[in-house]
Image (cartoon, rainbow, N blue to C red; front, side):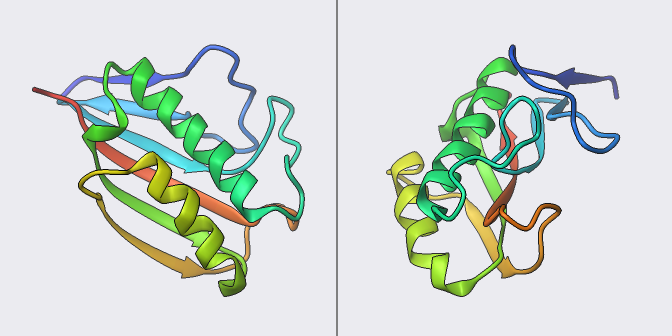
Length: 128
């Protein structure tokens, strides 16, 4: 099965050896996405809603670069650093998934940079 690396325009160099997304057999696998700018600096420090919006906007760009849309998302893995941010994350999440929601899970954990409050990894099926 051939795979295609998906890298939207303007993407910075990742902190570790991975790519923003991979397309294989009509499925887009989006790497864990953090609220980073193109220089791997955390944006919107202290604001879980703004960080979630930033993360989902990046995910959307990966999926659209692969030829899909957010309607094609089937699964999200959500990582948050504090349950107190759960409501803010969900409020923004609902803006990006207003119709039928994808399956998902959410766990509390530490993230690679202390100012990052949320990370999301996504799977989307774009073969129609």
